[in-house]
Amino acid sequence: MLRKAISIAVIALAAMLPLAAAASPDSIILALCKKGAGKAPSGWKLLCSDRSTTCYFTEEQSVSGFCIRTDGSKNFVQKKVTVDVGDYPYVTWRWKVKELPAKGDCRSGDTDDQAAQLYVAFDGKQVMGYIWDTNAPVGQGAEYNSPLARDVKTLVVQSGNGDKGKWVTVTRNIREDYLKLFGSEPPGTVMGLRFQANSQHTDTVAEACLERVEFKRGM
Image (cartoon, rainbow, N blue to C red):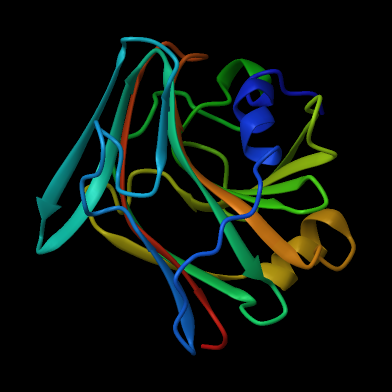
């Protein structure tokens, strides 16, 4: 199923070049809690679609994070990384949704808005996205086409307002999810990450925060 909504956002992500991230023996931690140049977290690049977006740092419930609010628009931050999936097959992150886009649903291009999206770009130009959808059920997948990304596929990992306003930790097995979505083993290296919110299709408001992303050797 074609989705024009994501094509522009995926172009820059899929074209990323590798940049080594600081690694410990057991994990690679990519934080968003420290302010860097301008309004972006240190080490991340901020890209705004228009002025109908707000980005800010927050300290809530003893958790520091970076938040994106869109009003009929989209916004995202991205980071170049080099992560060997064979060494670090697990990814975990903590996020919070403050406002889900009304009628958002990844099953239709006309309503394909989500408050929180985390995209993982591979060296083979495949992109896998984890999303918090308003209406589509957990486990729902979607497929997109992009000029530069060979394949873009998403998976709903949270749905609805049940955990709205709470910091939620999500842990996924990258290899298993990739096999489910693409039907093959993942390329060897993760090349980039993107945290995004959008509400331009439903012309509503979306707002979410992300604390950090961590790649782990095991759970």
